[in-house]
Each structure stands twice: as structure tokens, then as C-alpha cells.
Length: 255
Image (cartoon, rainbow, N blue to C red; front, side):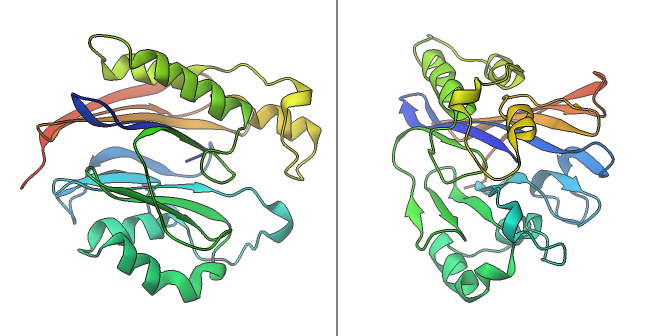
């Protein structure tokens, strides 16, 4: 994932409203969200190259999502896949605290990442760029390729748009997904300096990214109401010229 924005316990009728764009090279093979045949309680997309996932939720209410931390200077091609961190948490009955503790000594084996994990009732965050496991407080939060709630233009813009939706009487997932389609490039003076050069900073600054070889591959929304009903919608893009497929899943968390 390269952009996440979510409302955690903001509305009285929803525990979680979560929206995310996954940005990746178009030629990296990926599978649309589905319940996995070898893990039938897991709903997630799949990275067919490394076998992991960028985001998923289970029928028991376990949830995880990951973004890369942009640090090209220290990037290693031989580092293990970060998508397997997400998958490992989702497939095992382990608390976020224990998962973090077990992983702590190996965090620097991975290229930079941010991981959201927990359940729909209680979310946590950690990164291998800083120490500690952080409980997510109620509110509107955003995460891209820096630390949680870093004020990048696309993060702030998306948080504000999600906040605006909170005032509506009803919220529909396809309305939320509209937040994720903004392709406006940020002004140069607002861009972060992550070491990739001005041209790439511009291209990566939009909520929805499109270029010749790299761009937004899927937009996803998960809504969890107070009765533990899940509505998961995904718009999956096959290329950079507009070919896409929509999917929607509804289920209730098993108590």
C-alpha cells in the first residue's frame, strides 16, 4: 500500500472506515481480493511474485495493512518481502504486542515499512524506522510512505475528504473509494524530499498515481459497523490505461 486513510471509532455507527491505494509496477503479478482457498477465513489480495499481501481481514476480525517507508538510499534488493509480515499476522492467533516483540530483533532485515495490525476493535501501528508499538487512538489517521500521520499533501487532502464524509447521515463504500481517485499533483513547494528527485516526487505526490510502468493497482475500502458487519469493496486496475474490475464482499465477524 502507498496511501491509507482511516476513521477509527469516529462515528457512533462504525468502528472502522478504512480506505487505501496500493501502488506498484503494472508488470508485477497480483491477484484481486478474494477468500483464499488455502486460508478460507482470509479475505485479501495476493502478490503473486512474493506470496504475501498488502492488506487483509479475516472472518474473526483480524486486520493488517502495510506501506513501504520510502528510503531508496538504504533499499536492499535481497531483503525479505514485507507483504509476508501482513500475511503472517493475519494467519496466526497472536496479539499485536507479541507479534511486535517476536519480530523486534529482525526488524532491520526488512526494507522500511509501516504496519497497521490488530482487530477491528483495537488497532496498533509500528515501523522499523522508529522504536515501539503504538495503539491507534480514535480519530482520522493517514499513512503513506513516511511515518503515521506525517503531513504529506496527499495524506492531509485524503484525511480532510474522509472527515467531510463523517458528517453525512449515511456513508456508502463507493463514496469512500472516490477519495482515492484524485490524480492532482502537489505543488513543488509542498513536496517532501525523500531522495528520489523532483520528477519522481511530483509523480508520487498524487493520491491516485499513473505513469507508464508504475501506478495505483487497486483501491480498497473496508467498513465495519458496530454489529461487526463487514463491507469490503475493491477497484482493481490491470494496467495504466483504465482497465479495471470491481469486487464487493459482505460478511459478519465470527464471535
